[in-house]
Image 1 (spheres, rainbow, N blue to C red):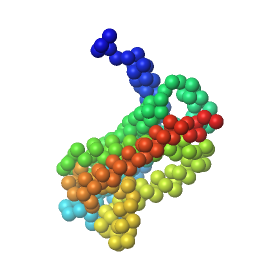
Image 2: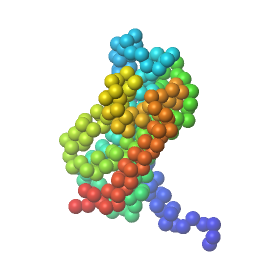
Image 3: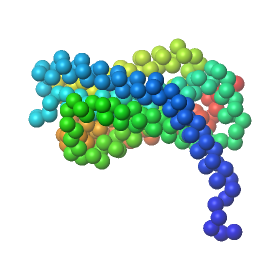
Image 4: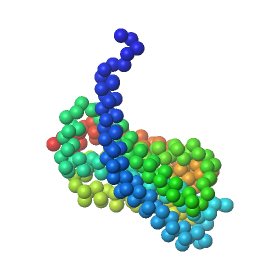
Length: 263
């Protein structure tokens, strides 16, 4: 009959919803570790860097260093926790052997991608909101162009969730996952302008920073608060959108091929 949704579509949607719900519950049941702990870490960064550098680092005109630092810490928390969610879930499932229960289901690679990345976005945004809620007491918030805040938060969380999928598929043990996070994610995050404006760097290091896609995520996100940024938000959107499309495509291809999932 016309106007009815095919049973197959309903079944696939139910599968995605179930896997997504399972992934959200996985981190929410230990929220003290997965949400509260990253919030505390960000507050410690704010207390230390804000106190030490408040009178020594000049950023945008009429923007205090503490106010400048808060959006960077929020976005850093979003990115790191979105990556951690999908990557840790996959590697734990592979090592404990319970991944077989997902492999026997009729879920497509799109369903896996949607559920894992969707849950990563939820965790990233939850931690980011927590960091903002706590740090807002240190400096009054400003929302000059709030649409950029939402756009870059979603794109950044989706991109790092996709990258976490790739890392989780590639890694076969926790040591490899730790190496991926410590030698790729952490340096790119810290060298993206979280704690400083790249305009304060020598020309050589400014050029190096412009090769880091994390810089564009944080710079575009910060634009939403202050209405000023180191580069055009449209350039940042182009770089981040393209990076997300490439990383998401790579993750989908690996999922479709069953890379390191079926032995």
